Image: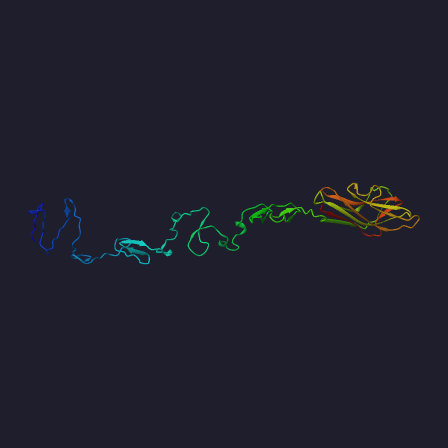
Length: 335
């Protein structure tokens, strides 16, 4: 092999320079430059060699590369299930990345799409594409909301609905009040059980079988046990007092008078009382029953006591006889 060493080869004439003849193979070791810059142009021919097959001036050229690994560069292929190649570009197909190919906890909140409206969540009201939705009734399972998940309220309040169908809290009532309807268009309310002409709100009673007597001609004598206390629910209530008793006078021509007291107030008519038993002149003692009906307005919600007082017109007046039971009954009537 001959070797020529020169610093420059120039054409003898013109501007073209030919190296070798057609069909010759010329090997150039190093870099061809064009006026100091790398030579740019088409490759007219490829010579096969190590890991390179094909070649020549036309046809395919195959480059044989080792497979890539986590520790070495090399050749790798793309799965057609996940990727698409077109015009030299490789793209990920829709649904090309399966759930199993994602590392756990690899998708952070920052990589998720922001919602466009406040108070929305990502989901779907029915089967289909995920999007922004509000929590709807059909998205909450039956019996899913426990008492612990409900908003706190006031002790004793009850949940009802207003005229618009919105939930409202019915305020706690007082002891003894009842939940009543306030009519259409408003929630119920706790109210004192009053009102309603003639409605009986409560009743109390007492009885006595003891025989008691007096010669006093004033109503200062009380039957002691034939009395009862009541606490009205309203200052406008009426108290109906009903007494069913028995009495007599040991004087053949004597008389007995019976009345009802509220505390120290006589509900009878002057000194005549509300009931009277009189023996016929010069007759034997007559035992007789008596009844009292009187309506009172105590105008209070404090406890008041009603009792039977009696007096003699003459002789000895008695209430009770031979353990016959006398009774007193109080009825509170709403005004």
